[in-house]
Structure formats: structure tokens, C-alpha cells
Image (cartoon, rainbow, N blue to C red; front, side):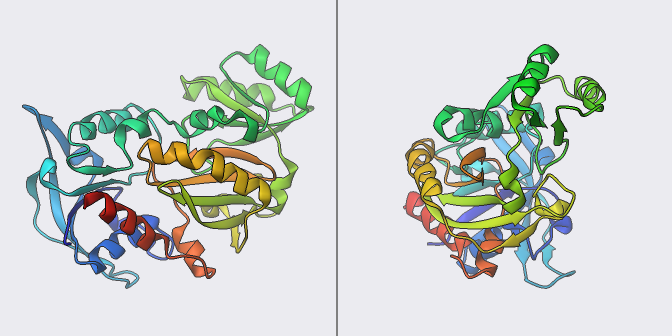
Length: 313
């Protein structure tokens, strides 16, 4: 079953083919005989009831420094595609939200992965609060008085932009940290949205586990250990990946959230777990599938395409 697959993603020339989940997913699609069309979020257009994009045929190869070739651009009616992969990275801002509104016009006739309406309704640091039994003490507010009170109670906290990604703008603030006022001024200056505040979890020194689910089912995990002197475990800021297994608590988390992910049409998702607590549910452009495979785990790109092809049938 050959499909036409349009991929809405960040610049293909900049991706790291050894770590990019986008590359792994696209290469798996190509290897299955599916045709690839590439475009960026700014190439997307809604006009007279039609959703189009300036696309270019894409051919991939696993050769570092020479990993892609693009054909000539043309305007393409995305409702003619079988699948659209929405894979550009956040921030989850109004541009991102607008793209979900536009792509919703063609879904599910064209299968958009993940379901754009549910991506819009499941911001990663907000969606997780629907599973209160599995998250650490959490505060979402712009009120400095509430944040001070939360810090007084928990002594050691993490401050994050509510719609950020990749560990950007994440601060650990202890009770006696004299930089607290300056950090809050920075958040107020650069972000209109509330911040999310969580109790610091010292278990992060042992790793922040990325657990991947496909169509609501657990398929693999990787542990990400922060670098020395770093509170963030994201691999692009120095986190070290290592093989891991699920604990009983993590299995319970997957069992609790899996049916909801499947119901919402969130085919490819990744959750972050520190110790006994889930801190995020990633639905926009989850990563980690190459690392899982590298440590002897499942070929998650193949499992994602198995799920997509099953739905297209």
C-alpha cells in the first residue's frame, strides 16, 4: 500500500540524522514505498476552503552531510495526501495553534499525525495535569505571591515556561536563591503566559525517563541522565542516554494514560517521568526513537507506520 505522505517539519538540511525522530520516521516511510513531500509551516495556506502547501518531493539517504535531495516545488492540495506528519518543533505559540486549525480542515480524510485538534487541546505541560495522581506538586500561575508561597512550602522548585520545549528557560530555584526576583522579572518580560512551577525532584540525578507510546501502547523507553552541574536532562543540553526498563509505577502510568491517548488520536507520544512522577506528555513532536533502537529496543519508526497504515486501511 503506497501512500502519499506530506511532512510539515523544520528545515530538513539542519536535522541530525543520527538522532532525529523526524528523519527516522520519514526514512521508514520511504523504505516502505511511500512517496514523501516536504514543506515548512510557513508554506501552509488556506484559501477558498482549500488547504494547500508549496511542497517539494523529498528523497532521503542515511549519509551524514548528504542525507536528502529535494525536487522542484509545486502547490499541492493537502487533502489529496493520505497522511500529513506534523513534525515541526514547538514553541507551542499562536503560529503552531493556527497550523493545527488549518490542518484540522483536512483531517481525518487526510490522516494528520497527531490529530491536530487534540494536539491543540493537549499542551504538554497542561495535559499532564489531567492525571493528578501521577504528577508532582504543580502550580500554574502568573501571580508572584502564589509562586513565593509554593517555594516556601516545597523549598526547592523548578520554574518552566508553560509553552516552552527542549529545556529552554528551565530554572531550578532553591529557597535561599537570591536570583528568584530576577528570574521572575525575566519570565514577566519575555512571556505573556503563566509559568509552571513544580517541586524539584532530586531523583532527576538518576535520570529523566522518556517513555514512548504508539496508539496508546508502551513501545520503548530511554533514560536521560543530566550532565554534572545541570538540572536539565535534555540530550541537546548534555543529557546522557542510557538503556532502561519500566518500573511498576511507570507501567501504571502508561496503563492510566494510554486509553486516553488512543481515544484522542494521539498516535505517537512521549512522556517524561522522574522518579515516581510524570512531568510532561509530549504530543507535538516527540523524540527519542533512534536512541531506543540504538540501545537494543524496538524499531519505533516501524511501529508508528504500522499504526498509520492500519488506520489508512
